[in-house]
Length: 332
Image (tube, rainbow, N blue to C red; front, side, top):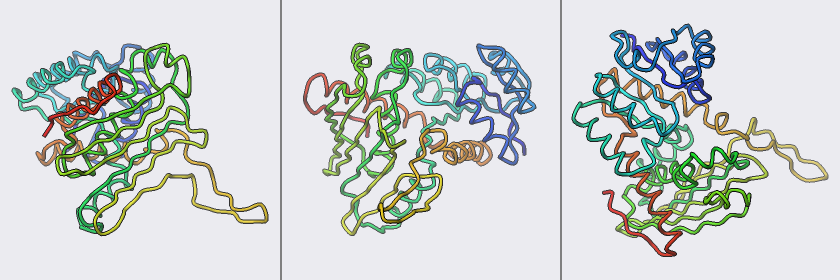
């Protein structure tokens, strides 16, 4: 069986997913759509796909599933359209920046019984997957504390900040999902502190560039998240899970693990400096998982509900910063 796919959005992440499709046996990119025709033509030419309008892709009999990599404000509407057209759906996070809009979208997904997978690619990073496997195998006993460090090499441009939904909905949302993935219990409380330490322009736009967040579950398990829009040493992505019997962790990635020692000390290569380089394998793995769900009928993971829960945590973090208190959440 060959799964036939349509791609809605031929930008940076759309190109990554097109490459992942090309590497998967039994998957074929049939058509590409983009608001900028030249972008769609270029990606179609490099993949052997056709250029079609988004509506045509949604309703095409020769397409089984769509990948939505358009701007966020189009996600929910496109999910609903694809679901009603009988298509399986992969959508980049978030489904929408408004929790109520997400719930309305998920109601359509449930009504149509559509398969919807949300693009939290970090769940598919081989190192983070191994951390989860070791937890499930009981290697560290009962999970007690999760520590997540997520720092970008540098801040995004101002126009991106304006449309991103802010630090918590854009950046930390990945870490909220990862915390849920590793804790084994749903958070019931969020406490966040945030500042503007990197770029004053970000503050003028009403956002933050530095934050620390603590999530607490009903049994008292704790996840702590450290975010910054600047890490002068590279793209900082680390995880540590402490349990009753020990600890499991995943360190940063470098181009090689070669280390040089001499009279000046020890020297290693710098960290990978770009999310699309750091998570190349994760992006491939998540599209492979989406294709496998189509072929086997397995539930999508991460699901639309996972997307909703991460957004609820993001909103709670923003509320916590504004009100300078812990905010209770109910996502269990």
